[in-house]
Length: 214
Image 1 (cartoon, rainbow, N blue to C red):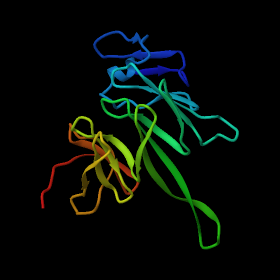
Image 2 (image 1 turned 120 degrees about the vertical axis):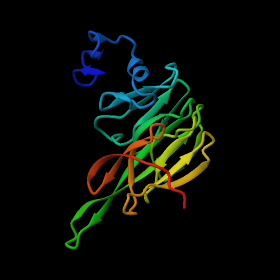
Image 3 (image 1 turned 90 degrees about the vertical axis):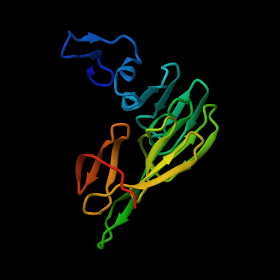
């Protein structure tokens, strides 16, 4: 899948080894042709959108490029509109029109000389029902869908993997570990394939896992 030009550019083309490339005219085609639910929202740096799983409803994110509302993006569907400070990544719940919004809040620390610097980033994932009503939030970062339909995977500040069902109830809490017993920090997971990307001492590692029962 190739997008020609910046911020939407001239269009999107589908390129394959076995045939000539073709221009995609369906605006939702990239999400239909990629690995299921893996393609992130697309658009410009101030306006992004993503379709639902059926390609019928679109969720958009719009943020002012300058002025007092920078950092306060608005998320909209035909049914509702909500403004979420520090909102970044977003999308629909699997097989649903309910949505999630991940916020990233940068903290500030000072060194021994009193100079300010960026501290740890606080991640929260906020849940909204399809009618726009607030459903709840969790102090964790959404990193993918679970292998079980209707569930999602999130990571907390202790690198634990949390599984939440479509009713926003925590179903499982797990911890990935390396062969030496140290905690592994998941970055992106494909649980149906049992592979994923993990952060390890500043490097991004592609790994495969197996369950360990104690």
